[in-house]
Image (cartoon, rainbow over all chains, first blue to last red):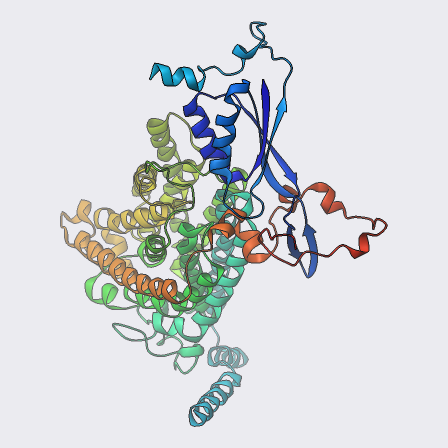
Length: 125
Length: 492
């Protein structure tokens, strides 16, 4: 089990979500976050005075998947989040020890995503 | 080249000299007052026209809040700057040439009274059969007509929110308030051929103000295109919700209040006692429009839509603008009520193809057409004769004659065609030589930061710790400051 944490531009989120849904990964969490990276930020001018704004808004996507599905999800994120300019964001993959579905008390990889894995979906198709 | 410059300097000097002389109307009324020859009625009528004009001026606040409420938070501040700049450009242009084109003498275009000068006898100048029936001072009449022009200009931009370059506002405002609006308004209610020769009835401007504005809005929208993300790859429209419905509601109510100057003030006369009746008719129509719009929205979408309630009010007020001085009170809720049905249906239909964020095409264009046409049905003979325009036997329901309906339809078609072609041409040239739209990056970032360098709601976009400010950490003095930019720039 792995957790994928991606920091992407706002406009990248909708295509990523649409494709993840189609691939069978409906479960994810997002947060509106602000952070800085290699971009320098922007300067606001307010009645003659300047205010430099280093922290830029991004969307943070969190998604826990079975280890075998990590590459599929990461590829999807990279495909839609990349514009080639500074400020596209980053993706991190972290290990996860255990997962529980609260409604039933089940645990393990089968609690992660409601749909069959990509490999299964391809077999069905 | 040198010669041209010298000529231009000479013309400028002559113009400045002419403007430095006292304005004739004010001088005349002062002189008459000194001689005890200024009738009280001048003061009474001027007072009413100015009060009504101030109510119409306040509609600028209504448009600002309506548009701000229907925009996303990142595009809220730009609307304030736009309204202030446009209102100011319109004032100067309408003073210099607009008022003369609109209300000077002539069938096609007014040709005297530029800079409110050299028009002779104030009663005989500026459309004696219309404006001349009121003895309010020329300055009151100018102010009242100027705020109408400014309302029409404000309507244009409802279709363009969240993606247009600020400079477009400035360029088009000059052309619109100096040329397009004055000529079309001259035809419809400035004594031009549609009013004097055809007999078109438009009491306060369903066509002359609202349809003209919405037509300009359609022209720019066709060249501008939708906001990013409005239409999916399958072409289906998505909602882009505005950020503040309470502000939208405040805008609607301010506009509603402004209409009590807009229609009743168009009597330009307090002494014949007509204006309270016109005010009542305006209120009845708006009431009808809100209720039918809510029912229509509930029928179509199974919800009581806040925005549609407001659009219904505006649509009904627009519709009653032309007939408000021509129909009896019983007709007002019917005219407004029909507008309240038409406007939501029109918004649903237009949204499938054209991205009109505030519904200006429906509330001002479609409702304006309906309001103008409604005179053809509902105009009462008593009021047609009192105003002395159009068929003296009244509309279809009184006279059984289609004549007035025909006059109204002709007026709508002519005004639409004229304003559309001139506006489309203007915007086409602007697009060609200057550009209409901001870049994709700027649209994503929002017009507040990209066009004005500041946010309408800084706390929403700048993290709180950065707003607090910072104490200098040891050694932080050497950190290079970022270059001012509205885009994310690479670190060097």
